Length: 291
Image (cartoon, rainbow, N blue to C red; front, side):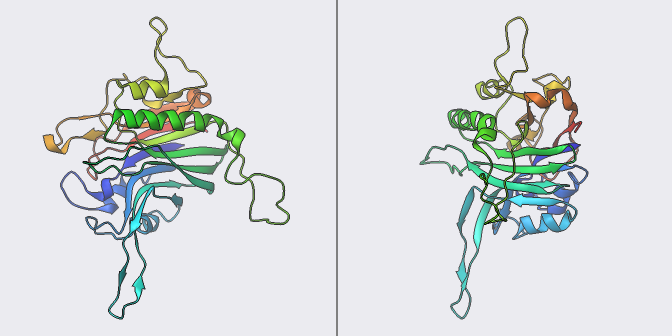
């Protein structure tokens, strides 16, 4: 199973051109696709409904979209009738198999008075994979502040670990009365994909994967996640998934990740970064899972 995460930057590429088809082609061969910065009614992007267009370009995929940023973009026509529209900015998850349930987990944030600070979220999808249902999370952590990212991780990580005990979007046995309210049992194991806006040498990264021991180094333990890039033998401090436009895209950082819960660590077989994709300031970040 090939899994990829890609911040498409609302389809704006390194050449300044907006080309959603180019972004989609870069991830078409995956089985599960996590996209960030997908928009509706965003003035900078020529595709008014990027969600609908991506769905058209990938007709064999099931998909969900639930934006943490949702603002009024409505207007009135010449007759004064309301044309209801929303400006939306958020995460999209696509899979070759049905997404049995979905929900949006809103992450903690701080109110700013200078730079724009959008609401962040983690989109949960329970995908009906051939080996059984698997929780997939498409996340986009805060870009402004390490303190805010840490607060988001402190909220999200324990929650992901205990969600099977809380249950999914529906629980209970009263379904004969409401058959549509079917329970989707949450898997213990899960995958976290996304633009985390943190570097591998940061305290936020250590909060996710755990502090290495002075002698034994990093360990795989239940309360932390596993970085698939490192799990497959790549040095932690190598790899670039985001390139800095202010430096003419000549240098960058590893900000995008595929993490898995500890129980999936041995099933991670390979990981790679698509260095050739030009459709964003980020690069598609891949790994392969034997499920």
